[in-house]
Image (cartoon, rainbow, N blue to C red; front, side, top):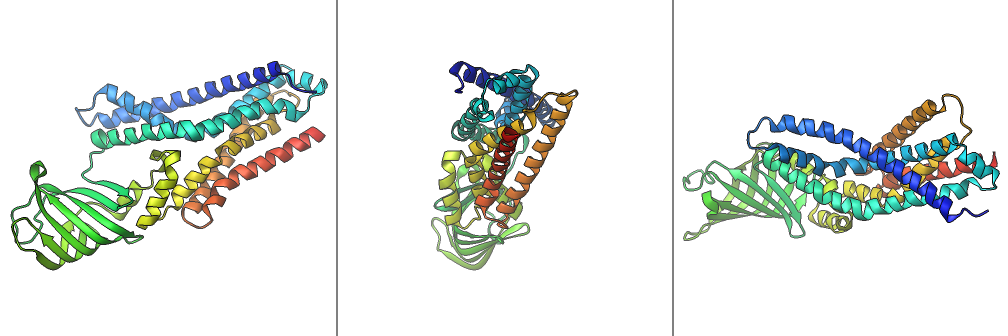
Length: 375
């Protein structure tokens, strides 16, 4: 027997409403706690208005929302099937000759569409909002003197400087420098083909230094084989030049680890740029493939929810169902995070790390539904 369009719309609408309810409820709780934390951090400064804090809390929500999406898909599917079971609607459907797969299809179709929507629309928009949040955070809450950017032309870095550039020079003080390197050699951060541009106060250009190589040591950059150019003076060659810095290797690596600020459609080009410059893009590859696997992963969550929800209702079934859902969500989240960590550290291939949770959950859900249908 074929499922009618009216029945499909009813089941899909019920599932969508439950998903939106759970998602907004979870986001509301997260927003409350995040805003309280932002207010605490903003209280240390008199220049941060409350309206900006509330706006920053909203800008941060998409990042958390994308983490919560699989849980919303899972729990809303469990709630939907539990409601159908409680009202004996599934019993009526089964007795009317409908198979499990037939009345699962509307919910599966919604989960699949939500997965594609999350990858193609929600993630790019969320990335822009998270990027704006991080920019406001650095400007108002975590004021930093260093800025780092990566392009196809290489690494660009800006930092403030208060000391003398040269030991016998009193001209340049309290300005900033812009460092550019064509190539980067992790993990010890050896730079090659380096140019350093020195600016004084009011953005006045002072001098340029070209170095064959540079390395980041604790508290300083060390440049080797340096040629210093200043307007109106002869080029100065030095075997070594030192630039004090507060940057560490961890600071630079973390600046490129925020994959959440890169939209899905821009990830392939960003990964290529990282690898051309010499960076390890394994974490971004894992993130990219995990986004690609989201539609399948959401479908798998529906199948897992159905495997524990489409059963005859029993006394205390609601509480037991909630406990099982929490357990499944915890296991899936823990295993997914663990595999992604292995993929990011190159212990397993990034594709395997990203796709394994979705494929395993999907196959388990299918086998459970086949067993339930035969039983």
